[in-house]
Amino acid sequence: MKLGLVWFGDDLRCADQNMLWRAVQEVDYLICLYCDEPHNNHPSRYATQGMSVNRRRFLNQGIQDLALQLQALGQTLFVSSMDAATSLNLLLNEIPISHLYRNHHGGWDEQQTLNRIESRYTDVRIHLDHGLSLFTPSQLPFDVAQLPDSFSKFRRLIENLDVLTPLPALQKLPPVPAFNIQHIRPWQLKQIEDNSVFTGGERAAVDQLSDYFSTNLPSHYKETRNELDGWENSTKFSPWLAQGSLSVRQIKASIDVYERDHGANESTYWIYFELLWREYFHWYATRYGKQLFLPGGVTGKQTQGSYYAERFRKWSKGNTPYPLVNACMKQLNETGFMSNRGRQIVASCLIYELGIDWRYGAAYFEEQLIDYSVGSNWANWQYIAGVGADPRGGRHFNLQKQTEQYDPKLHFIHKWQGQVFDTQLDSVDAADWPIYPAQ
Image (cartoon, rainbow, N blue to C red; front, side):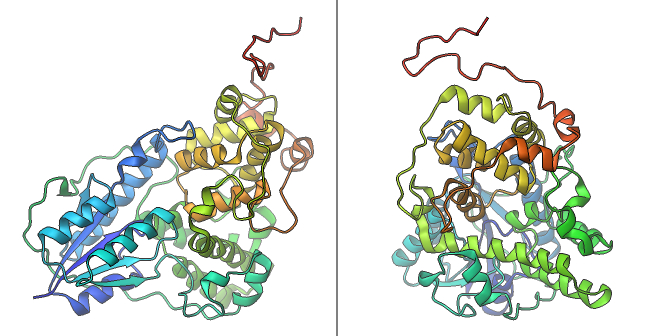
C-alpha cells in the first residue's frame, strides 16, 4: 500500500493543483499537512513582532477554507505547530510514507528544508510541482540559474509562451491513514472574526475572480491601477495569489475568456503584464536565494542605510513629516493592504528621506501585508533601494510631486489622517542627546 504526504505552503487550494492529481493516481492513502511556522509569531531581527493581526486572520481563514475543501473530497487537513523540518522528520520517521508532494516555493528557507529532506530520505519519491507560477522551468527558454538580469529582458522572452490550462476539479482524494503524532492535529473548525474587506480562502478568491471579470473593469485597469485607494481601481487578486488560494493560471484563463468575449486592449494586457512581474520575482527569489535578504541585495553594492529606532517607529506608525506617507502607512496598519503606488512611495521615503536600511521596511511589510510574498516583497524593496534587478539604480520619489499627482485634493490623506503627525522627527541626536523643539 502506497502512502503519500502533501505538504501545503502558500498554495492553500484544491483547484488547479497538479500535486493533488498526482496523489490520486499514485497512492492509496494520503496525509495533507500545513506547517504553521513558529517564527511567524515571534519578533525578528528587524524590530518587527511577527505576523500582524490582519495577516494572521487572513491566513487562518485560508487554512480553514482549505480544510473545508479537503473535507468535501474525503480528506482532512492536519496542521503542525512545529516548523516544517521538524514536522516532516517526525512524519517520515514514524510513518512509512512513500511519496511526498510539494509545489516549488521560491523562498530560501523552504528550498533549504526541501533539499535536506530530499538528501536524508532517499527512499521517498519527491514530486515537485509548479502550482505557484505561470510556467514550469522546462517551459522557460533559459535555465533559472541564467535568469535575465532585468524584467524587460525576461518579459520579452516569455510573454508569448503558452500558459497551461487550469486543471479540472477533483472529485475525491485517497483516504487518511490512522496515525497519532503530538503537535500534528486535524484543523479544528472555528469561528474566525471577519470584519475586513478581504476574506482568506479559495471560495472568496474564486468569488473575487468571478466578480471582477463580470464587470468592464478589466478594460480600464491601466487607467486606474495607480490610484491610492478604492476597491475597483485594481484587481485585488494579490492577497489570494500570495496565499495560493487562487492560481495565477486561473487568472490568465479568466483574462483570455474576457478578451474573447469583450475584446483585448492595453488594460487587459496590463493585467497579464503585472502577472509577468510576479512571475519574474518568483524565479528571482529562486535564483538568488539568501541574496534576497542581504543589505547589498543581488548587486552587492554598499548601501548607506542604517537603523534609527525612533524614525523607523514613526514611519511604521504613520507619524513622519510626510502626510502622504503617513496616510499610506495608516491604511496598511488598519487593513493589511496598500496600493502598489503607495508601497513605492513609502519605501522611497524610508530609504532616502529617513536614511534607514531598506531591509527594515521589507520586514515590516512582511509582518503587515496580507498579500506578502517573499519574492515580490523583498525584490521590490531591492528595486527601490537600487540593489536589485534594475540597471538604472534606485527609485527616489519626490513626495510633493507624488502627492500632487495621486492625491491633489488631499482626499486620501484626510481619509487616513495623514496630516496628523509629530512635527519633530527626531527627539535625540546621533549621540542620544535630547533635541529640544524649536521655539
